[in-house]
Amino acid sequence: MNEMIRKKAKIREKTYLAPDIYRYSFLTDLCSGAEPGQFVMIYPVNGARLLGRPLCIADVSGEDNDSGRADDPGHYFDIVFRVVGGGTEEISGYNPGDELYIEGPLGHGYPFDEKTIGGKNIVMLGGGLGAPSLLFLAKKLMKAPSAFVSLTAVLGYRDRSMNHFLASDFGGTGIKTIISTDDGSEGIRGNVIDALEESGIKADLIYACGPLPMLSAVKRYAKEAGATAYISLEERMACGLGVCLGCVAKTTEKDAHSGVKNARVCTEGPVFCAETVDI
Ligand SMILES: Cc1cc2nc3c(=O)[nH]c(=O)nc-3n(C[C@H](O)[C@H](O)[C@H](O)COP(=O)(O)OP(=O)(O)OC[C@H]3O[C@@H](n4cnc5c(N)ncnc54)[C@H](O)[C@@H]3O)c2cc1C
Ligand code: FES
Image (tube, rainbow, N blue to C red; front, side, top):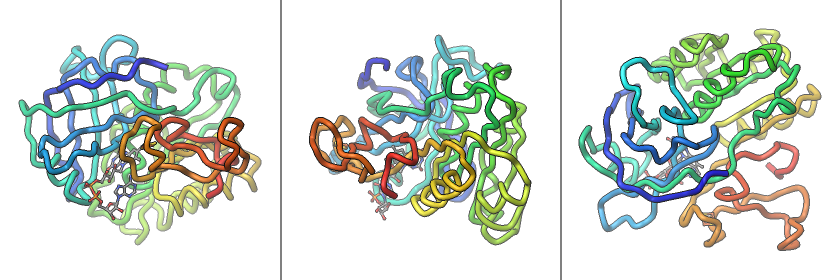
């Protein structure tokens, strides 16, 4: 695991993806050694809001990671976020050239070593704002294409107004990408599991990120299909460093250290093997 640090970073690019959804690219080497599934805490400059906001790392360029974008060979990393409250509202008001404090990379990401992915049919399931961390994973996996048998991304959206954001980025990596919408206005009607079943795609290994009900359904689906699932959980976070215990998730086994069935999402997660968490 790489060292976590806090730095001021400049926004190099801001892209509007869909109503209330933005992609920011930060000019910094902060996340050069980051793993897919890790996140950063972004600190709004507004002093009234002291807590950082956790956001997944969606793409990284420089040193260990290289996004493959031809336009900028320098160090940067991307986030994609939806405006849901005061913190993300404030972050959405910044523009290229503005600076924010960023802490990271934080947490444990998706395992994707040869032993985990070798010989597997891999499916990535991204519900809404779950897609960003999987995009970073997709780019990493495509650097080891010989290790797995197949790789498919299924991205679920509420409706067509979400502009199937990031779907073209997944497609651009060469991965088979399937889209679903809850109302059927684009792609397959239904959720990501409906789309997976309708497409008849075999999954031995699942990586999933999205709302909790979706992750519970993924856990059930994986158990029935005999697949292994790694899911990225979201909990409200305060410190992001394992200190405040504000982000605990229920686990199926007792923690050897604390003797309780709890795990801190910010440090033990956010990615967990689905069968180890009680969701
Ligand atoms: C590890 C991790 C990675 C995340 N990655 C992303 C990402 O890549 N893109 C993205 O858009 N969002 C992501 N989130 C969620 C994001 O952190 C919250 O939406 C954000 O902190 C809300 O801050 P706010 O001040 O705008 O909203 P608040 O005013 O704090 O809350 C507004 C509403 O959002 C809900 N909310 C706030 N925080 C969370 C949370 N952590 N999980 C679920 N609901 C929440 C509140 O209950 C409330 O209903 C991630 C969360 C975690 C824990
Ligand atoms: S956010 Fe403080 S322990 Fe996880």
